[in-house]
Image 1 (cartoon, each protein chain N blue to C red):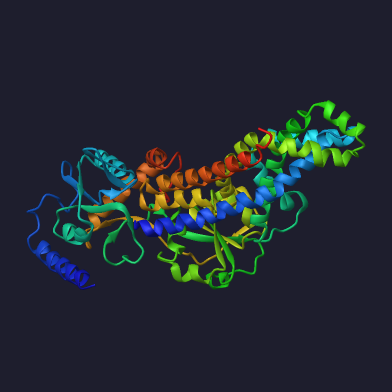
Image 2 (image 1 turned 120 degrees about the vertical axis):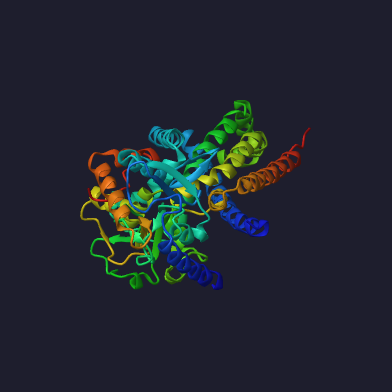
Length: 216
Length: 267
C-alpha cells in the first residue's frame, strides 16, 4: 500500500488519540486533586466515599469502565444513546479512571510535607488555604512530577483502549490497515508514532522539572 | 473488458472443441470408480483453498477429498489461473470448480450444485424500526464489525460504496456483540453483518431485532460444473448431502471455521 496514504490515515488516528489524551489530562488532573482532598478530609463519610471511588477505579479494568459509562445509561436507566455520546463517554471514563491514580500521587506528595511546616505556618499567622497554596502545593508539584510523568505516558498508550467504544484512534487504524493489506508496516509506523509522542511528553516533563528545581 | 470478451469467446470455442473430441483429457465427465476427480481452485483463497508449504489445503479441498473417498475417485487438487477457469473446465482439464465459488451472477454459466455456504450480508434493525429497505438507511448510522466483508464492501472503494455513501456514518465495532449492543441502545440505527451471525443474534435475543428483506450483498457458494455435466454434478451433490446427513461435513467445517458449521446444504 502507498506509504503516504498510510501515514495520512495514521496521523488522522493520532489526532483522535491526542484529543483523548489532552481532554483526559484537562479533566483528570484537577479532579484528582479533589479526590485527594476527599481522601484526607476531616469528615469520615467523605473519606470513605473517596476511598471506595479510588478502590473501584483502580481495581477494575479501564476497558470495563469504558463499557459501563457508554452503555450504562441505556442498560441501567433505559435512556436511548445518541451518536455524540460515544466520544463523551470515552472522555468521562478516561478522566475518572486517571483521576483516581492522580489522587493517590497527590496524596503521597501532600503527606510527604513535614508537619513542622504546617505548625510553623500557623505560628506565622497563615490560614489553612494560605498554608496549602503558598507553602505546601509548590513543594508538592516538584515532588510528584516523576510519578505524574509515568501516568501521563501510560495514558498515551492507553488511548488505544478507546476502540472498545468504536472510537477510531491510531492503533485501530493501524490494525485495520494491517489486516486490509496483510502487512506489518502499519504497526511499525504506529509504534514509532507512540514512541515519538511519549518522547515529547517525557522531554516536556523533564523541562518542567528543571524549571521547578530552584533552591538546588 | 476486451480481455473478458476474448476469454468468453475462447471459452465458447473450447466448449465446442471439448464436446467434439471428449475423452482425451485427464478428467472424465462421467462419474465412475477409479476416475480422476480434478478440483480446480485458486490457490490464493484461504480458507477455501490455498497453498501451505508444498501442500494444498483448505475447507473446500477437504470436502472434495471426502467426496472422492466415498466414491472411489482419485482426488486431484489442481490450482488454476482464475482468469482461465472457464477454459480449464470446458476443456476437461478440471472436473469442477470448487473454491468458495460465488453462484450469484453466474447462475447460467455453470451446472451448479445447491449452495452449501451462504455468505450474504444483511441488515439488522431494531424491532419496530421505520427502516424497511436499504433506501431507508439514507442518513442513518450503521455499525459493522471490523475486518468483515461488509465493512470492505461499504468502504469508499468497496463493491457497495454507493450504498455506503448514503449513510450518515459507519461505526466500526470491535466485535458483533458490541454492534448488537450499539443497535439495542439506540447509538446506531442498523447493523450490517453476515447472515449467519444475524440469524444467531435474532435467536439469542428474540423479539429485539428485525432483518431487512433486502440484502447488502448476496453471496452463496456452490460447486460449478461444466454446463450439461449433470451426472457428475448429481453424483457429487448426492455424496455431499450424505456427508451433511452423517455429520462429516459439519466436522470438516468445524475444523476450518473455529467450531462453526457454515454449511447450509440440506441433507
